Image (cartoon, rainbow, N blue to C red; front, side):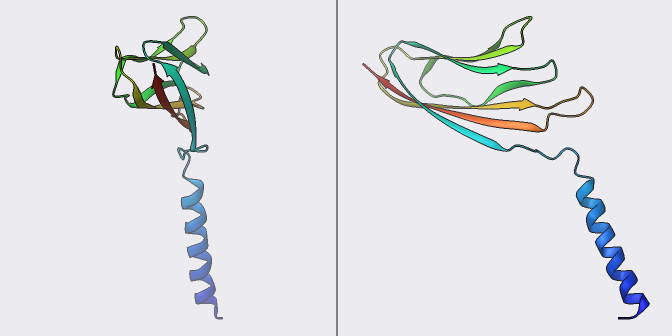
Amino acid sequence: MDGENRFKITLIICILLLTQSCKKDQVLNPDTNTINISIKFGALYEYDLGYFGDEEGAHISQQATHFQISEIGRELGTGKVIYTYKSTANYIGSDEVEIKSERGSDGASPNNDITTTIIKFTITK
């Protein structure tokens, strides 16, 4: 292999390494958790998502269908995030919500630890 070909190969390798190292905002933890819950219709269900910093949080990425209450709230002062669900009156069947949690921000960059939590409800009498 002559010097020109070695240079081209070295240049290609350097470009590949450089592009990989520049992916700073890449998601480091693309986790998905699925939770199966059985509750009685009209019962209140709460899921503790944990504590989040000021730049972190959670949101509903796919809303439930048969809900009277389906929301995320944050406790002031502690940063604890709670998802609350209550089915519509007299509904019996299945429902599902998808929640995206984002952590890992240092205040200057976006969150890079993203977890999806899918809660599958079976609502009974």
